[in-house]
Length: 176
Image (cartoon, rainbow, N blue to C red; front, side):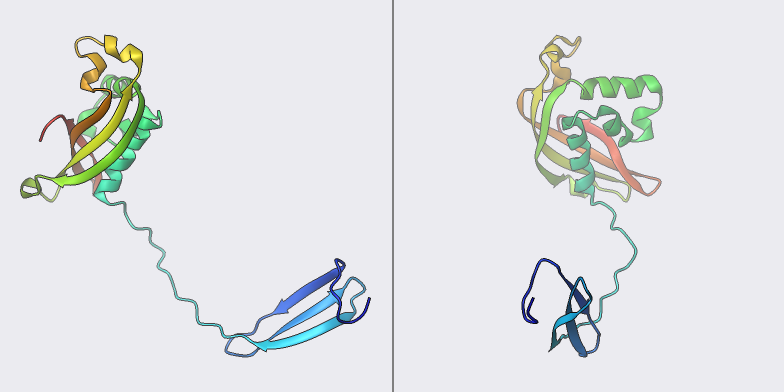
């Protein structure tokens, strides 16, 4: 093999030195003979330090995640995003999960702030437009077929409540 060739039996080692010092590339074959040495100047900027914090989700992210969990057929996870007032015992949790399990599909079309004049430090409302398809058996639910949802576009007003410094789903309504 001649000194300038690159074969599959060559290994490349890169040495990088900061502060505008040369970068040296050594191409060494498997018998440890140096075949080619090149140098060029490399400019390296100092790495920006990143804080070790993760940003908290925005309120609209909470609502979006809640409805996505329902659409992903994860009713128990959706129930866990609700305030303790709405999920104060196992039978209430099961009732919510049963309702959330009645959706064949659900997707969020839009989320926007609603009734901001009524917002407090611990409660905010959002208008959510959802595209929904209910499972066929949900039409037979008594006393409210499909749990009050229609196939197609649905408007809901969601109240987020801050509990222990964490935003949770406090309510879901058909109107403001």
